[in-house]
Length: 506
Image: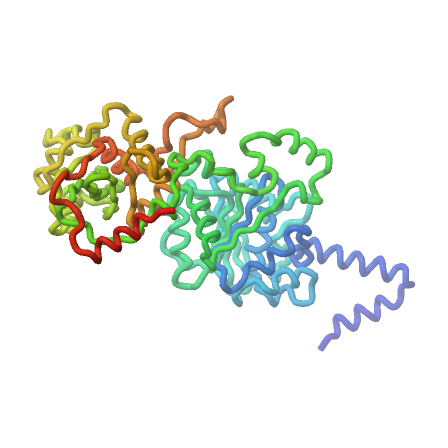
């Protein structure tokens, strides 16, 4: 049944050995150009990656600067996912994809570019369709590819797989409705697009592949720095996330002269680590840089009913409304944050009802809300935000922040005092189960200039994100609340002992 092959071999025997080698080399060269992906070889620094993207990996991130090779590696994996492992058997590239969790075809693959231009020029044409410095990663073999529709960024394979290119700036609505086996996202898009992509992989045990330069988090290019948050989760032990790094200085295809220019350009600059080595930039801009979970976080305990209690609310017409409950210890005036509320996209009456339910039977001495939001009036009803909360059962008052940075500085004083036993300033302790508060305080950063001569330098105000509970905390700190002078001490011996343990911070 191998007559064509047998005939070809018989024909080849008619030539002398030198001509035979030349013919075989020409055949291999033609095959390489038509199915280059079967012969693709990673950089030395990329080789370990193909052992680290395992069956247990849900999200695989490749971090690297420009020209580090991250996008080419992403393109190789995406196309290999569509082709399936059998396509590579007997060819050099098989050893790179052998351990990847690639399912049998057909597979549905999304390729997501940051915007239309990058999707078209870099991912689609440079990497997949035309190649740059090498043949394209999409095979040119008509026995493999059924149809390519460049205008819609779609590739249909004979095995039933489909690759579809999508632009992240089209918004999350364009990422709904399909089950996807692999989503490859090149550079950091907005969090809602990532969330939608993640959802598309849920019902088919699909995977997420990320290739990006880790700059966006510190330059405030996205509203929510979700990539850095994923990286933190990996560091803290989440097993289904894996990040690897690429250095442009280790890319053998970048000329040495160009590497010297890159070193000269970025050494000592704010973006050096990300541009040259694929490192996240050091997050030295934390507002609460003295926050120390081992000291500030405490196990929850029953707060005596006699302690003064305050609820501080950071409301929003849309987006997230947050509230924090604080109790003040008599004698020391230490502040304990013991409960939180954190919900989005509800009307004031719903938020007020939920906050009251969460409060239960706790006696609250002071309710207060954001003075700016609370004093604004609705154009139709002419009622202020404060009026709406009062009408819905919360007897709130406007927080007195005096100056824009007064609450911020007051809250920082509470944080700092907790680390030092000697200051007379009250300390702040946070119940360990306040997860949203902990997330925000660990991601609350000073703003940076994103453009111009001051790019990378800090501003004198925090970034407007991860700040809902932070704002509520600052309103509360502005009061510098005092505990009751009498009738407010811990009474039963068991609670006294537990309380003493909680305060043995050393």
